[in-house]
Length: 188
Image 1 (cartoon, rainbow, N blue to C red):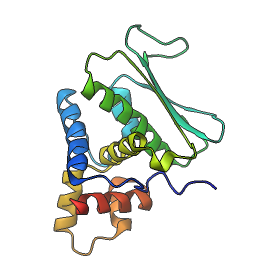
Image 2 (tube, helix red, strand yellow):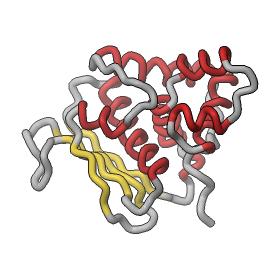
Image 3 (spheres, rainbow, N blue to C red):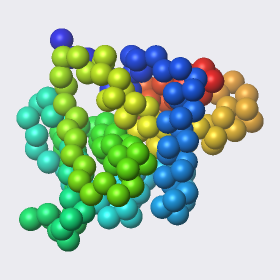
Image 4 (cartoon, one colour):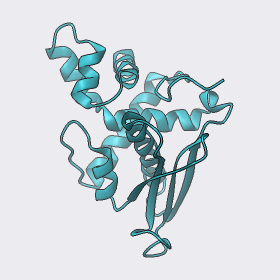
């Protein structure tokens, strides 16, 4: 049975864990001097960070991957030493989320060890994905990249009776991701 959308938060994080993940994103953006207009163009963010971002035809279970080797100038056949690939058969909202998820691996690795030169991760539909806390953290960070917490909180406060559809439209994401993010920020 295929798992429900990647956006569903199946691992419950503590308030402290969520704050820590939000801080990782904020600090990374500050250090890298990244300022994004809303809605976030995650493809542009990744490209601005030096990634060669490409769609690829993967077998069904593989959704995306990230390969970084900062010990060389370029990975053979690519325009960079940093690559993010996503399954091109997915819809645009899923593609955005996959790129954000892979970028979350990079952000997390660089935050934990800024001198780390090699990063590799794949996103696939393994049977125990929903219980994999590490991958769920990357999903949380991906969601926070696409729907920044502070902006969402302001939007929810200033707009009465906000619907999930309005949030999805504002951030150009799926309604499932919008619902997830509303739940996350209201949990804190």
